[in-house]
Image (cartoon, rainbow, N blue to C red; front, side, top):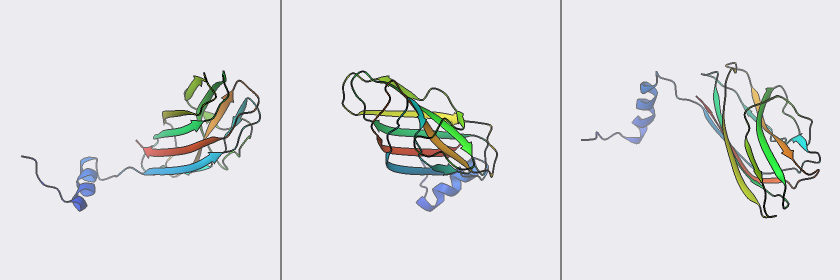
Length: 153
């Protein structure tokens, strides 16, 4: 038989099961990011997060990419400290993994997502998170429907 657990006890029991620390989770929704004008630039999302209990965070990003036919594109998760890069800024911070990558076969918008674990962070230090945009053409339309979820792991 499964014991009944009242909703207000769920968080308490979960916290007890992991040593009393409930991980932070931050969700940021952004309607759109400005178009980039060169083949490798930062998107300028301006998402900030301060890890309190861990030196690792998991970053999950979903986005709609509006592309032209035949465009090869890639969105690479990036992070750093200080002030976040603005849209169309030069490459900044540390790039992690390969991100989301595709070659568009039509001019229709494409959904994309990437999940990355970033490690070696310092507890209590504020970090910015952004996407490096790499496109095979010099000007791309804006990204839209952007959701960034950051969780300490």
